Every structure is written in C-alpha cells, then in structure tokens.
Length: 102
Image (cartoon, rainbow, N blue to C red):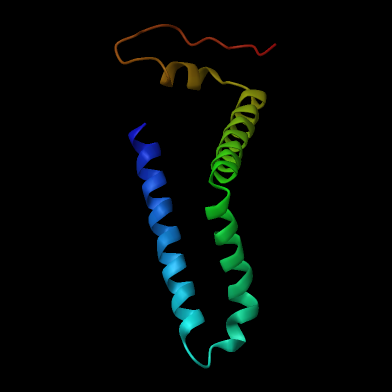
C-alpha cells in the first residue's frame, strides 16, 4: 500500500515537472519550432486534468492488465520444484513437489 501511494506521489511530481517545462517552453520567444511537439502533450495533460476519473480508471486498468498478463505468463510457463521450495517460509522442511496447473 505504501509503495502504491509513493508511486502515485512520484507520478504526480513527474506530471507537475512536465507541466512546468511545457509552460516554460510555450512562454519562451523563438521556441515556435517546438509547438508541433508541445501542443499535443499540453492538450493531453489538459484532458487528463479535465477527466480525472477516466484517467485514474484507465491507469488502474493498465496496471491490472499488466499484472494479470505477467501472472498468466508465469502460471502457464510452469512451476518447478525449485520454486516450491524457495517460496516456502524459512524453517519449513518439506520435499519439493511439482504443482500441476489445470
């Protein structure tokens, strides 16, 4: 839970820094050649700010989708006896066994 909050705080700090840099680039004279690069990012950040709930839900969906894909790859690749023994709490002595996926 603490890592999730810390990650969210870091994400917000990175977004704030990006907004500050984009605002600086937009305000500098002679930086018009960067407008084709800056404007889409600026519009995207404005949309993220306008639709906060959608942004949070999409971010959560990407995180859950990535986690489920990683879990599926691990689950379908098979579990070896070494992983069963190494995942046991310390002090537990049991013979390694193969886990079978249905």
